[in-house]
Image 1: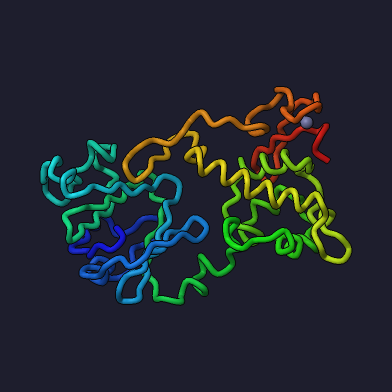
Image 2: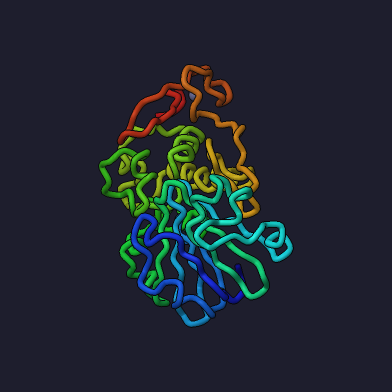
Length: 282
Ligand SMILES: [Zn+2]
């Protein structure tokens, strides 16, 4: 989509999770995509008029890109029905948005459950937009153990729940919180503030946790994520199913930390499953 001019936008519904903004299609037609960024799970497409398309995939959204050669392989049908159904799935019933570009390529947004979001905002508004304003730092940005300590300093909630809190740090999902805590030898029910020294600096353990969060996420990105069901990239390639975790989803199996000998247990925290080794996680 980058560097291409939008020549036509087809909306087959009025809404996803929320209604599309007024005149969405006409306001972005003719504009070029200058840059694309990610903030937490939001995609931000900067247009050449300063506006930004703000998009979120929700539970089941995906973009599939077809270059001009590929587009020719799909028979043109009436606009009410997507012609890309054989590639995007569901016979095209859930292809809600089509972006057509000046080079003949098409981006199709498919979303069976329709928890996705598409909004149009002004430049600078990303700092104050209600969905974005309270987001914490990006783990791959200039995030530090010191910053993490500051967020946890007075927190009495347990560390697992704090890691999932998008105001503390964004992008650490349930699986990776479990894995990072296991690697760091920290019990998921430990009170967050006990990982911060009296002077506000991170303890050794919190420094390890910070390093392990980054490492676990980097490794996950390398193997293509860990979606258990239906992740697909923009070429329609399905995600990886056989990701191996050290703690997550390994209830009653031996702990894989060297010389531990413990057994992985499952508990529930804030309605989510946590997997931990009670022997090496303190
Ligand atoms: Zn263990």
